[in-house]
Image (spheres, rainbow, N blue to C red):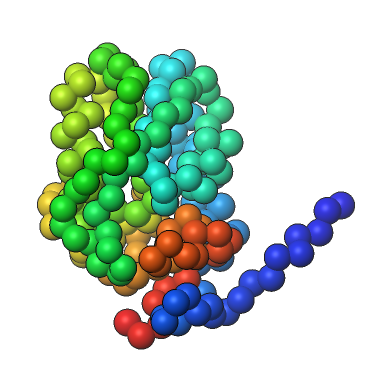
Length: 187
């Protein structure tokens, strides 16, 4: 049997900020398995296309798609609206979609939805392509931070409006590789 040699740190420091353990990898994996089963049940024989939002959602998407047990396709889009620990409120599309989404069942895979501004802009862009359906699967949702109403069907964990890093989420470029989710200590 292979042993996991990665340790669980109760706190980490990234740049000038301290973070404390918030959700363990095991807790995150339980949420991901639940979402994978829901997506499998809902999209069986519908050949959905998963649109993964880079950079933050790559770890979540990799684990989620291993739990989806129905034929599907995957593509990536890169958008940005964060600077340091705050959303800028402005969405800048960096790398767009090249796939034809017309009459396709689309699931946007996101690491975290907080203000909802990025997701609203992305949903608007996808809807312009006239898909058969479009839903969002997010690992984390901050309902109290939403600045626009969003209906998100697939939510791994609802969390408070606090800054988090790890499991794909970063603070100024660092922390994405942490196996667990950490919350800013000073909030």
